[in-house]
Image (cartoon, rainbow, N blue to C red):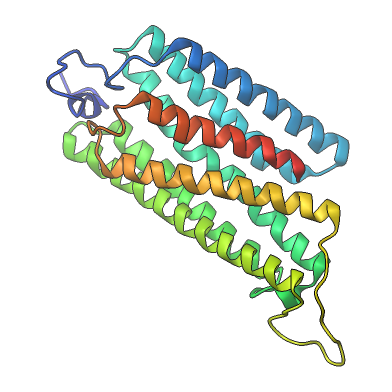
Length: 274
């Protein structure tokens, strides 16, 4: 009988447990339900917002992120009911790793609009360059995460599962680097605009300290909070995957609940300011 795909991941769980639980713990049922409800609510609100305000980019970005998170947490709830079944583990590991890439795509589309409205001479990049650079990185990260998930889930050896995990890790690292650079550019833009320090002077124009319009300021606050929590989540997932399939990080449920589920819920909610 040929080896069963994904047995390698099961073999990578803690050997001292000896029970074949790929999570290394049983996901807590009520926490899974809580996150399913929270992600469902914010996803529905994003869909309503998209149609009401005709901001269609929300559908393939924020709404899709929410849908992927709902599927991931439903997989974890299935794992609560059947902790020895490999399929719930694979569903949640793939969807929760990839989901935030859709949200970062929305963030990478919002900032260039703000830059164009307030003045691109305060930005290190032109509004056109932001989506080209950051969406390319985002798509690349998403592809690597998807490929890594596929390699890990179809692996028949421990080396194969680890190879898939490393590919997913490379996608997370790219996302982490992109978000960190995006945050630095965003901060610089806000500071330069606020204090009238453009990256290049316009002819015959005297720059002075100015106030950010209230509506744009609200969007920037939401963007900053979402970026911060995605950064925290990316750091956590980088440490988690670096630690291995049976490491302490991936085997500690509360860390996943706080630094992945909790961080993305907060980011999804503040994105309603967009």
